Length: 123
Image (cartoon, rainbow, N blue to C red):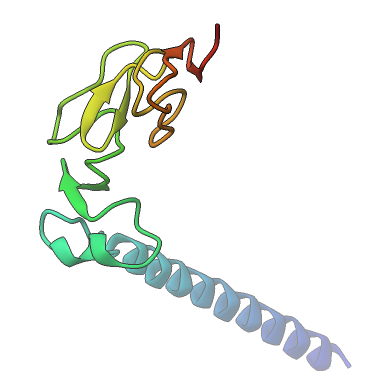
């Protein structure tokens, strides 16, 4: 009976050791996998901006952008629109007074009305 208890304890120690070694090996594999992650940027792979769901088809500072609507890259990379202006068709415009982009991009006022405070024919 005494030998049976000793044998049982030895078996338990061997199992515990095997589990800890397996856990350490799994941890090493996980860390190695995460460190080998590849980041795809448009400066190296320009076609990544053409993928469905991309913000835009242009590449500025390693990011996909839409040069016709991006306020930080309006018309060209790095061209920022000033305070109160938005980027429409690649140009910085004031949506509170622009007849072609009144209130938002593409909202055109008719010939008789003007754009005031971002609304056509306000007065």
